[in-house]
Length: 88
Picture 1: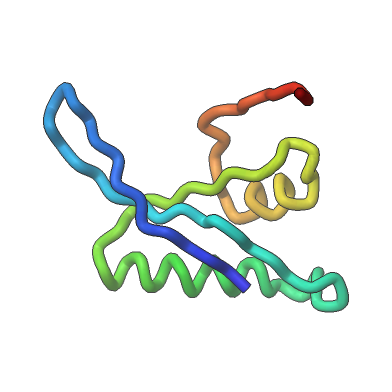
Picture 2 (picture 1 turned 90 degrees about the vertical axis):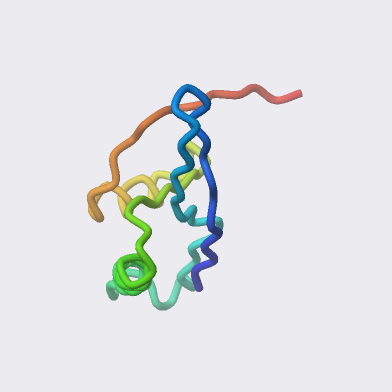
């Protein structure tokens, strides 16, 4: 399944709002991985984005999740930032 949220980002210097969709959850059950389902879900999402006029999407995932990193890299996602944390 895929859960996508609309997200508004405001640029205060130009008072311009830009909208993007953020993938909040993307999950493919283990028995169905490797069949292109993540790509199909994201392709469907981007088609819907084009239909409604949204041009950017974002995703965040735990840095230790290397399978997520590979999926998003194969889909052409660019890393904009990396956040490292520490256990409390």
